Amino acid sequence: NNYLPENLGGTEIYCHRLALALLSLGHEVSVAAPLYESGNPTTIGEIRESFIDQLRVWRVCKPYPHGLLKPLMDEISDPPMLQALQTIVQKARPDFIHFHHLIGFSAAALECCKKLGIRCGRTLHDAWSICAQYHLLTGAAEPCDGPSTEKKCWDCCQDRTLPQEKTAPQPQIFGVRQRYIHNILAQADWITV
Image (tube, rainbow, N blue to C red; front, side, top):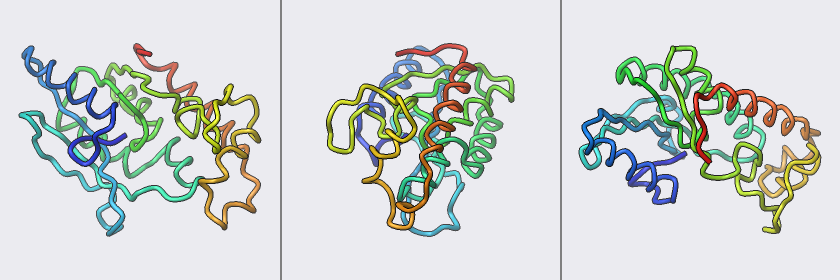
């Protein structure tokens, strides 16, 4: 997802406070998060290390997402972000990884860490795992009863599409996304809702 200080959302604040609490109990804690940039594409995947409140923070440069189809595909697997995550894991050598979100690194991040032999858990802060809009609200901000069909999700997300994407018949991407994320979450050692 995002992290402090650039973003002050609920997930970011929760994650930061939890990390500080674990640090105060004597655990070694690091945070890895994307750093969205709209500028230079040569920084994609670049890792920047800093400290916030004595907490080591690894930020990985990533272009700010535009449109619908590429960001949806990146939510499934984003190779430059996965390579950066592998580098961070090799440096930090964690006993386990607590994913607060898979946005940014992609759903494949959990699978990647499991293949490295690391126990992984996931906290579900929102409906991202079943909803491409993240919050089970339609494009008109009405409550949604869930992803009953791929076309329903495609229609709901039309306000996020770029003009060149509107003509492409791509509703099946929602089914691919849904199945992949479901399979990835099944690999987690624990899930907190």
